[in-house]
Amino acid sequence: MNLTADFKKYVCQTSASPLGLEIERAEGAYLLTRSGDKYLDLIAGIGVANIGHGRAEIQAAIAKQAGAYLHPMVYGEVVQEPQVRYARKLAEVLPGEIDNIFFTNSGAEAIDGVMKTARKFTGRQEILSFTGCYHGDTFGALSLQAEARYRRPFEPLVPQIGHLPWNEISGLGKITKKTAAVIFEPVQGEGGIYIPSLQFMQALQNRCREEGALLIADEVMTGFGRTGKLFAVEHFAIEPDLIVLAKALGGGMPLGAFAGARKIMHTLSENPPLAHVTTFGGHPVCCAAGLASLEIILQEDLCARAVAIGDRFMAGLKQISEQNSKLTAVRGLGCLIGLVFKNEALTQQFVQRCLTEKIIVGWTLFHSNILRMAPPLSLCDDEVEFALAKMCHLLS
Ligand SMILES: Cc1ncc(COP(=O)(O)O)c(C=O)c1O
Image (cartoon, rainbow, N blue to C red; front, side):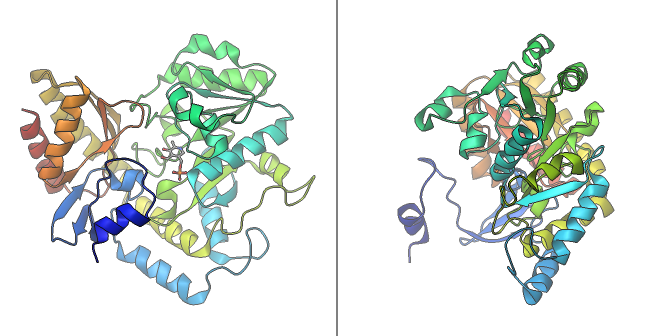
């Protein structure tokens, strides 16, 4: 069997040039291939493996739950211990008054759910997002995207969506009493690792409060310690009304969620009942894995580790960018780091050279000259120094 040929033939392809590594195992910060190569994963499955790959605690949690039951009933009908325990733990650690969780299967599905919740709760239709945002690829989530080339082939999309300029306080005047919600990423990921100012974030919260619009934080990429806080909104001392989670939420299993205060989330419980349901959302095996992962993040203080790893990478890479014209900027928050290259060709060359050296770095969707690093928060010092030395060598 030619696995790669079959992958290209039978598995629907999403790009002309997939990474195409044949994965055999994943352990710690490494992906091990069938051909015996060992790749250092500096993108953590795109922000999923915050605790690293292949942790025994996650495998044990999955095995235990799989031995008890898999899918007893659709979401919301029967009491499933892993789901309840995880919702309770999340309510303890989520910011502000958020204490009520709706589990989904993915991030984009949670975005759709939060859009429905905002419309129904406020009775308003308009939802605003920002230039450079990415919230996923379902119809609702795609409608929020400002990049016309990604939207156009699928139009018409959800109506009453508007886009505000990212990180510009002057644009916030467009939030009015007609606005149901404003949704934002605390650090834009696919948009190029853009970190907003503290003033902008606080002005956004104030304007939403004044106009009665719900403030929705999409923490799908930034959550669970990635930026050095458990949730990135904590950097800006703001408290969103609703929050969207996925990626690291499931500890490597498919799980998403949106959450808010009970008084908001209750809008999904009635009039009509069962207006927003899911068969598999909050699957008990995924919740068991997610809870085990969150416990590791808290016990091992991976938020602090994210700061230490991110600071070291950024200091080393910034030094290179000052001496080297290929790399024009390095920016980031904790372990979400953007490398800005002079042009696309240099970016591609660097990615290829990294791959040759068995290091995986990631792309960003909207900028062909910006790379993303989102390594596991469990990298040890030797792995950080090894990666940095290799990258600096490849850039020089
Ligand atoms: C910020 C953000 N929101 C939402 C999503 C969509 O999540 P999913 O791919 O699980 O649908 C992503 C995915 O990359 C994301 O980065």
